[in-house]
Length: 520
Image (cartoon, rainbow, N blue to C red; front, side):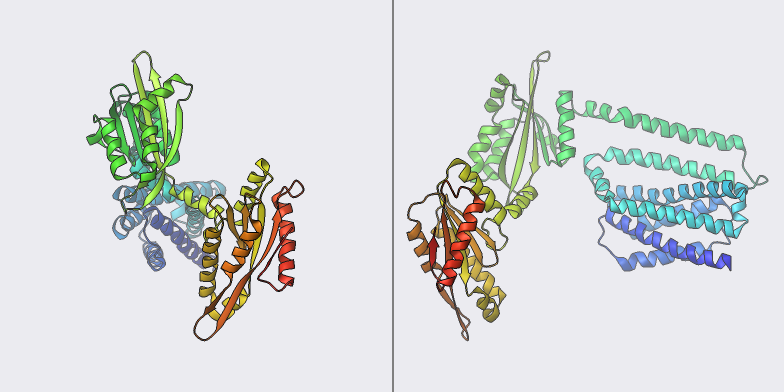
């Protein structure tokens, strides 16, 4: 009975572990989520483990079965990058085998059994397997939680050498796992301790040399790859990794030649040795937004870069719009770093280019109303507050659309959204480019004139402009605007004070029958 209960526990925990682990593999390989597939594979794996339970009579055989089962599945049943698949195909069963050996040793030490006794005691073996499956499941869940998949994919493009190093360590660990598994054989069937010690020393030596290479090898490779100023190149690589930059250009400011050019981490040999002016001219003519060409040319010219040598400034940034492959302009950010070496009589500049469109999108969402494109309340508050700190002159308008609820109720929310957009367009045209116009939410808008002149005239035009009748052929709905206005004074010199007074005037306008305005 006890063995049966443990068997059921093992089956359930094994399937849960496989579901989590196979989902992690899907994410690493950028494969669309396929729940049915990973369920079927999980069932297949537990079936294989169950059917081979009588055939697997040693720890070495069990480790080999686990390794082969997952390596075959990852390599042949999952699409994806070949290098990443190879790494993951070994990593998952390797960790499982290490946990298996660890739990076996732990259980043996606690229970007082010899190492080889696990395969002669079914209860003990089930306990070991349950503990192993649990630890492996926790590890896989942790990898999913920290989004480890994105770091694996970055290695393919940014530092493929690390994948090779990790693969070498994996291979050494596979040998070590099977070497350690030999210790779990009965004494009469075991291998020579001398042979086991030899294999362990060899694998430990390989792992030591690999770790040593990781310590200094990458720097040696970079020194051979890029024959230029070491500190500048080191700074460049840090920028590429931390900012996820797309382009890095290293320039000899004296000769005007391109010393190094990387596009998304890949060296572009065809551009190395060409003149920097030729590279930038091609970008300016074909890709830079017309409004940004002059600024881009000024910032990136060698003359402009050399001017900074007479100052303490050695790094600066600027932004511009660049046409992408799909013909859309996106925002980019350049960081220029200049360094000199008096001993070598050299002036070197490194330009790191980063796509910041996502940041711009976030800034827009944080500042503007999604529906109308006007400023949102937070931005309105900040802009008006900033103006009032410099000049306590202006007029705050709070505008409420009368009868707007009837638009939604009778003509539908789609028409309602269109009406709000139309009102936003009218307000944008009515107020000047230096004024501030926004939407507070719902059918309530806000505007701020940076002058006290012609406030009443502007209010009359506003009411006349908003008043309109909409119809779907069956039902007519008319809207208008009730407006409350507060003039900025020494007494009303903050956004909150202006808003409170304008809001009172708005309710006065509502009480007077709507479609009117009041000023305080």
